[in-house]
Length: 297
Ligand code: NDP
Image (cartoon, rainbow, N blue to C red; front, side, top):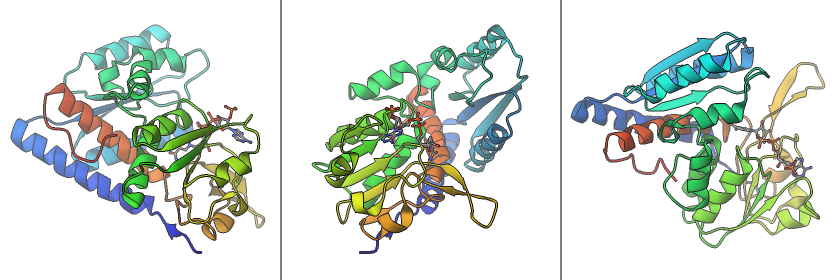
């Protein structure tokens, strides 16, 4: 079997197009422009690239982008004062702080300070709790991207056996909640899971969010399984330099799976697309407008 490649780059472009259309509609009919505020503390080069990409894509879909760069030694009080100001700004519908932040700041406390209705990263405990209890929430972006790709590829997920490898609050747990919400039978595996290969072999859907290069190999899979590879790992190339690989061994898995996401070009591009989707959703909820269809859980 040769797996169908799930093209996350193309799908994300399609999602951005839908967002652009919805933004244009809101602007035209209601005179409201969704706005996303991004806070960057310090000068981490990778974070600067992410923030630049987020800002660029925000503007491309017609939304307002507000970037707030703070020095690495900013005090907690100064950062919280900015978050409070953004929480109260009617032109700002989504707020995110780019992580990691310097050690003297607490990521948990920063997320807790953000108004849950503007928490477009979906990390606030209120949003995590709403998701866990099956209520309307803002869902963290990478898990939402995984769900969209699976729904698009498989249609109904009801009754499928899903194994999520990884139990982080950022990826593994919300992915599992989303799949449960779509009536999958969900197993969450982690570093203490016994007989991981056997567990994975039961799965119609495998989501790997581990952070270990090429850990899942083709002989772990049930033939025809759908594989979503969340991992982003940089490894050395034998000829020098580095390249990105996922948590799944692509070559051996593509020979057994029914469908698979590549790395790069699979889940990765969906993350920013879902951030934009969450910002439009938050804007619509704040203003009592119809939400875009198909861009929420
Ligand atoms: P974390 O390190 O927070 O969590 C990793 C999880 O994997 C943990 O639950 C851990 O188990 C589990 N794990 C580690 N080793 C094993 C093992 N040998 N067998 C089974 N489970 C194991 O990572 P994240 O969830 O934040 O990220 C996971 C991956 O996804 C990373 O590669 C990251 O770069 C990538 N990522 C990609 C994004 C994207 O946009 N595509 C966005 C976010 C993350 P335990 O809890 O027991 O320690």
